[in-house]
Amino acid sequence: MASLDIQARSATTTPSPGVRDYPDVAKLIDISKCIGCKACQVACMEWNDLRDVVGENTGSYQNPPDLDAKSWTLMRFYEVEPEPNRLEWLIRKDGCMHCADPGCLAACPSPGAIVKYSNGIVDFNQEHCIGCGYCITGCPFDIPRISQTDHKAYKCSLCSDRVAVGLEPACVKTCPTGAITFGSKPDMIDYAVDRVRDLQGRGFKNAALYDPPGVGGTHVMYVLQHADRPELYGLPQDPTISPLVELWKGVAKPVAIGVMAAVGLTALFHYITRGPNAVSKEIEEDEERKAKEEQQV
Amino acid sequence: MKRDPRDLVRYTAGERINHWIVGISFILLGVSGLALFHPAFFPFTMLFGGPTWTRILHPFLGVLMAVFFVFMFFRFLKNNLMRRIDWQWIGRIGEMVDGSDETMPAQGKYNGGQKLLFWLLALCMLLLIPSGILLWQVYFDFSVEARRWAAVIHSAAAVVMICLIFVHVYAAIWVKGTIRSMWYGTVTRAWARQHHRNWYEEVTKS
Image (cartoon, rainbow over all chains, first blue to last red; front, side):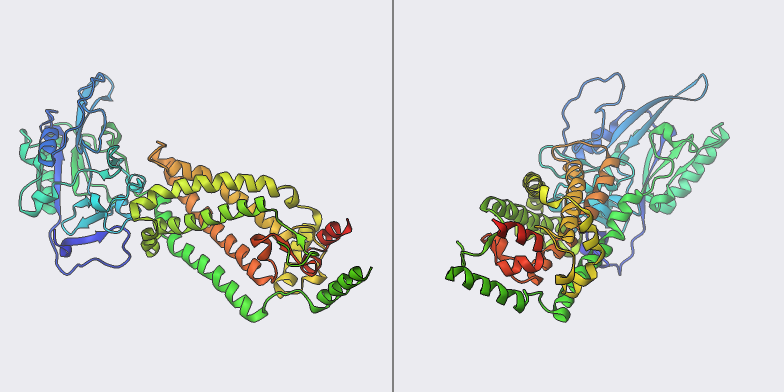
């Protein structure tokens, strides 16, 4: 993508080119419509040319067991009882949420390794990635994974290459039930409002849209049947960038430079105001006298 | 080599070599660490063969420094135990800063300020080593929350240590006749008598 399309860039303290304005895009995942077929996982592998190792059955339909540098999206299966004796099989397509305020980008020390495009997509540029893993500490959703092969960080790109040429992400294209939709963020919110109203009419009174404000909203949103308890789906209740990361990547940086500069300058000005601390002439002469005395003995 | 046979030996060759291994690894760690800490210093990664090499080398340099710091710690420990006189000296540090230390309490091999620096540097290392291991994610797999804490502690301890080393280096430059003790090991009798009277008495008695 051209540099003009970048809105934010890791380890960069000046603004990125921002004269052009693009509408925010968003992917909406309606969990109530998902049947757990994993077509999205397959489409993701196919489009992005990724082949994770064939795993082992761990007693769940979930396979692979976790996200990986080669598995950018994953159907997570939860068997829960939101109310006693009422089993629900909740299936959530996990992957990068494309936060408006991305913690990974804030934490990354390598200029340009993580960018946020002006349409809202957060993308990793592996050629600039140094493999430090700081993005993992910045992410409130535990998404990025470092590859054991090349020690670079990987995650869902929201098919930024497809979106750039006007196509929907591969997972959206392949979803057989329409559980994943893609469009401008306002359109997706409108559509979600309809879906939420429908679910509420069918007894899911806590159904709502998951678009957490703690990270400025996200460009991947969920319609949840039980939005009051996102933890049922393995989602954080109120995700934010950790205050520790905010401290480390925020105020600590200028304060550290200020303190180090102050100590260095204080030393310099001390030297030029007080002068060197040299051995006193008196002691030096006395020691010379002693040396002469010893020689004479 | 002694310029003057009356010069006093302050550091043995082994002590000097140990100090400079720690010193060189500290400088390399400081520069590479700052490069990964603030984008303003990111160009320093070019001194280490690029950004990825900086990330790879920094922790190994850390291991090198940690090992030799521990040796140095035990070598110099005995002479750095804080005594009441050291706290009295620190209480009057203003006089030292003014450049008139001859009226201050007589000091042994190290003065109170040097001893305090020794302990503060040791404390920094005590924080830097475990937090550095937590952040070394190529070889270790700690929880994300532990690594967040480690990042904050590692950065803070590193900045404090850099400032302490600024003070250490400046003191050596400011007090004339000091640096040679770390180059070739000796100081003049006059230097010792002015800055470390008790040590002077002790080593000139025999």
